[in-house]
Each structure stands twice: as C-alpha cells, then as structure tokens.
Length: 73
Image (cartoon, rainbow, N blue to C red; front, side, top):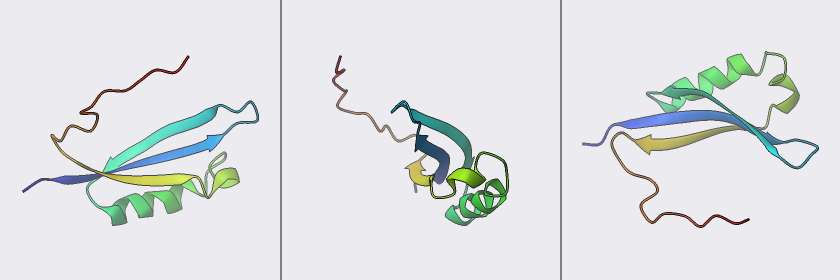
C-alpha cells in the first residue's frame, strides 16, 4: 500500500509577473493540511493572499517527473 502525504504550498503572482511560492509543510492527512491553512491565514502576508493556498497529494517513493521536461528560453 502506498503512503499518501499532502504538500501544502502558498503561491501567488507578484506585480512583476513572477510567482512567489512557499512550501509550508508536508502533512500525513488532508485534514491536517487544511487545519494548517487556518493557522497561516491569521499571519501577516498570508492573510493578504488567503485564496492562494494549495494542497497536492503525493505518494511516498513514487516518481513524478518520469518523462523529463523541455526548458523554454
């Protein structure tokens, strides 16, 4: 059985067009990640971007980028 983990990030676009992304934690359940969001929403910076939290589910020891990527210059 694969073990699930939940990656919590906060990401938004700056005025310059660049993205500002912070990894906030890796949690053992989606509920724990959602509980963390409620705490972060009360903190400076995060409270100005309350809709910019993202939770992604991953499986431990599973590869995600299996086909490579193409860099665009």
